[in-house]
Length: 507
Image (cartoon, rainbow, N blue to C red; front, side, top):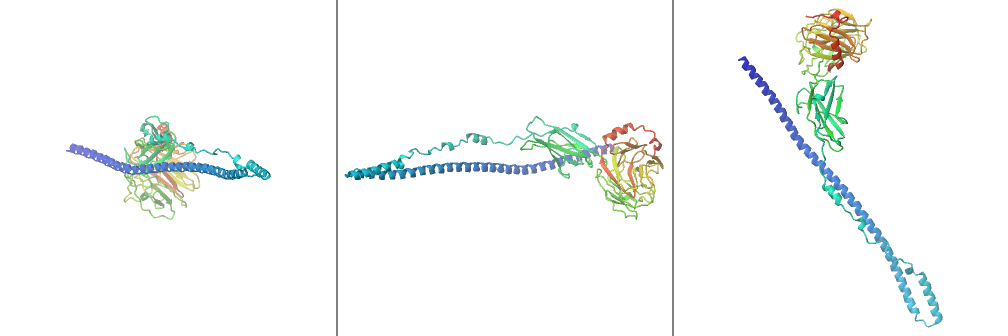
């Protein structure tokens, strides 16, 4: 019976997963269908604009060439009309002179004839008709303004859609995810020397496999990539995965996107558990402020996702003597759960816990203290820590403690034992927890210098824990274990000396 139920349960799970895949595919098809409609309308509009532009150019060219012909016509008309007017005037004058000469031939008186003949001779010498050029200044030929658009007509008839670059191919095996950076590499299915640049798009997601249309963040774009590789750096890994796609562009058109790939970018994300904090600590989401007068508890805001934005703690000034300490309540490793009926930290244990427990794996986070912080601790604890307990003063908590009050000290603490650290306190401390390997290592986050190492066997889930008094600290999560830390911690597995004095098997 139990076996049949298990088999049926597997079938139900398989069907549910398949239904989820089909629904996602239906959403994708609907999205693509809308895209076809919208993109078709856009390219039709673009085509109209291109042809309207071409018509406009042709109209401008026609108008310009028509004006040129009309100007030439006007010029030749004016020249010929001027020449015609001159010839007409000369002909009238010449006909008048001819008539005068004919009448002179009838004069009988010699003296009078001689006088008239001399006048005719003088007038003939000065006559415009003998100075005229009897050749038209311009011809009626206009063939030099004729056009032959046969070649251009062939070009226009040869108009066709632009060649579109093919979709690039992304090989997940060639992509690198490390140190909160992602390097994406791609290649073209065939050589294309007309590609001008590439466009990379990416977005975060908590779903494996193909990207989902619904309930997703918007794609972010990196444009004008000249090579076939790009690195996104300084990312916060506050999701399990990231989707990537890329397309090639020439000078005029962009090609289709590549098939999207999904790369795992999971890292530990947690914030601060308001329900665990000392009453002198005000917590609002990822902000904590130390209040010497006893701040009222802020309403806990449950963060319902495993990979949630990084927490940030800032505690501020004012005194009171003592050193801090954590408390006992815990939060589950997925959706944070409040401490329920368990009391807050109290007394001089100015402590707040993370809202997520660590039950396996290797994890990393960083903490930076404000300059005015008088005392703070960074470490981990079991959920059994008492409300009056201070970090490092029990056998169920481990921490680095910095004291800048009266006498500056920097020490590793566990089981009420302290080991002074002969190194400068860094601006930012990196915390590496290898739960399965039983290691807790602290680093200078900038140089990756090892500050201290605890080695033990964790028998219960642990919780990140923080203490701050008269000052504040900032928490950075969503960080992968740095490559340098992974390399260095292997060499620290057999540490002795400073860490061995605080090594234990906590129960």
